[in-house]
Image (cartoon, rainbow, N blue to C red):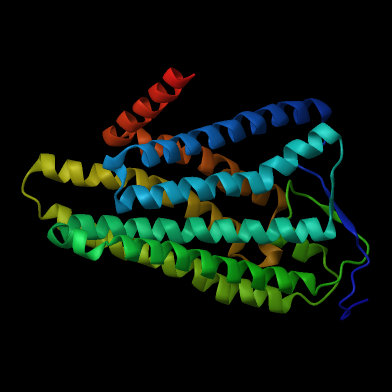
Amino acid sequence: MKGTNQSSVSEFLLLGLSRQPQQQQILFLLFLIMYLATVLGNLLIILAIGTDSRLHTPMYFFLSNLSFVDVCFSSTTVLKVLANHILESQTISFSGCLTQMYFLFMFVDMDNFLLAVMAYDRYVAICHPLHYTTKMTHQLCVLMVVGSWVVASLNALLHTLLMARLSFCADNTIPHFFCDITPLLKLSCSDTHLNELMILTEGAVIMVTPFVCILVSYTCITSAVLRVSSPRGRWKAFSTCSSHLAVVSLFYGTIIAVYFNPLSAHSSEKDTAATVLYTVVTPMLNPFIYSLRNRDLKGALRKAVHKKMLSF
């Protein structure tokens, strides 16, 4: 079977997070609550930004895109978990598994690119405030977002096609709650060296380049802020970046722990715990992190919710 492009596996079995019925019930409720919080929180941010003209700025344009991506990102994995529990089925078809992996890769890349673009936006706002409106034009913002979608889609397609060429012979059990690339590579009876090589080279470039841009942006921001003589001014500048830094740390910390290690170094239990953080917890926390310390956004949210309540 090794070396052939044909797969004898028509579906996979997703073991999920637990095999104990009582624990499965608790996990189902937790995932449902977190998913509803993710959708509600991110949609409220999109609504607030869309309805308040004061928030029609590059920073909030990128934030609304991030909120949209987070809803899609969480839906890619969590909806299947909830559906499997309700239907009392743990299976996913081979094509369904590849489709889920494609969208997972695409939305992870989009999160990655948008976090880098948002860091660049903060760099221009703090380090070059007088040139902010001329540098961060609407055309440039749209171009950066569209470019991110194109690169993310092509990167996801590459890894999905590389996975589709592999053979899966006997074992179809995935010790995970979604079709992630690492457990799938472990199940394959084909040579996976090309897949691993592409993850550690091309995949690393896709992830590391935006991360380096974020580090450079915040190094410049820190240097500029430390030159501000007023403590109040320094605090205001740092507070506008703190929420973004918190999201960056959580997102990249878990991504690096899961994907950028050799297959032999992976533990299914540790990988599953880490992926829950970046696929479920991070998209849920983003709206709270970005809105808690932002008076403009909190005011817009209150206004948007009040309008909706009055209309009902």
